[in-house]
Image 1 (cartoon, rainbow, N blue to C red):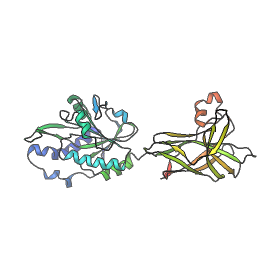
Image 2 (cartoon, rainbow, N blue to C red; image 1 turned 30 degrees about the vertical axis):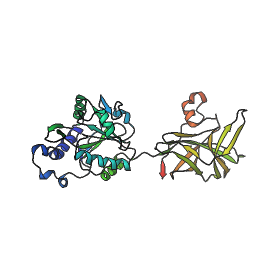
Image 3 (cartoon, helix red, strand yellow; image 1 turned 120 degrees about the vertical axis):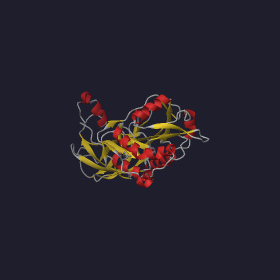
Image 4 (cartoon, rainbow, N blue to C red; image 1 turned 135 degrees about the vertical axis):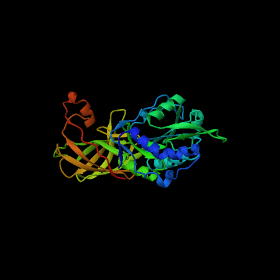
Length: 361
């Protein structure tokens, strides 16, 4: 992939490529070299060194809340500048962004206006009302807009026109990718199709797994035991509810999903459950005294220090394979709790087992 020294250099290159098209109406002439066929291809321009994305101040979202780029950390964010009364460049870019978020719902798109005089917060709220929720509009005072445009190397100018709109805005047009850590990751020239951006995102910022299994462990068994139990945490980073549907393992003939409950009189009871819910954006905890996997019909003893393979299937079709560490007899708590309170319990469970991501689904 083509690399450029810094964000400013990338912006300068994009300005040279795009501004001829954008500024041509003001000059009254068209440059044949600025035709779509002559524009650079979809390969993104990458900064030579990681560069923190400037976080604008004194800007407001279309819903009236303060805008902060830092608040979007943890998800890829695409920024681009334009104005709502634009008849050509901005709608074309927005159309591509619609295509991007349809394929990558984890991506946030931020449209920053260069025309705060007309693009007020109430107007922006109405304008974006039918957009996908991943696309937001941002406005602010002329000074605040000028500051953020300068920070990202965006040039723009008002051009008075004899039309019902009164004026247009000539501006550089490119999209900037800010990664999950708030760093400039790439820029795309105007006209890069959604499919190319999605392909680039798959390489630069691949989607995080929706289901992540953490802290898998089982307790060591004694020779006389015919059953054991497996415990872990399930984190759902997606936007749809899911549920653990089944577990398979070669060390037990009949693994079952179970829940332990306690009534008002202190009576403890275990019962099988059809599934264990994992809410969107939430977590399911399998631990002693609650949800767990009953390992019925052990094929052999669970020996401390070894690992047990578990194959987890979810209602969404996601399949996750993990190796659960067999831990010695000790206090009845999960590895996470033992890690947090190791000094109190003597570290009986040791360090947590590594996390695992989906293998399919």
